[in-house]
Length: 92
Image (cartoon, rainbow, N blue to C red; front, side, top):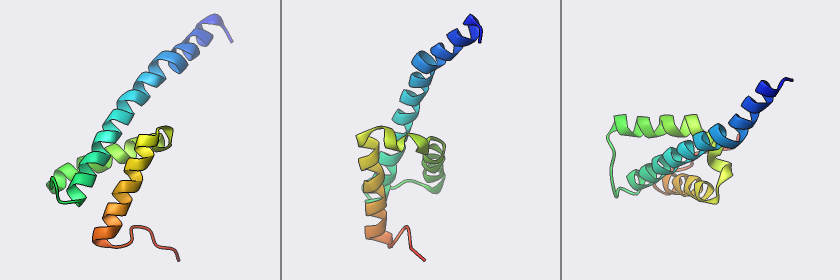
């Protein structure tokens, strides 16, 4: 491996990747928050806005386990949904 390749890997690992993760987790936090408010009927969203939030969650779901806030938010969304609409996940 040459010095340029190593430099690019280090740049990604310590500069670019954390910046992408920070942007993604911010978007994910917002999407989970908005869905929770929608489910709780505090701030209803039209269908196209729900779909936009769902796309963010699908794209950035890999970051849910990276921060306690995201984990709590994800569980809160599932709990709220299950309390208002029934089970989200069902065993076979």
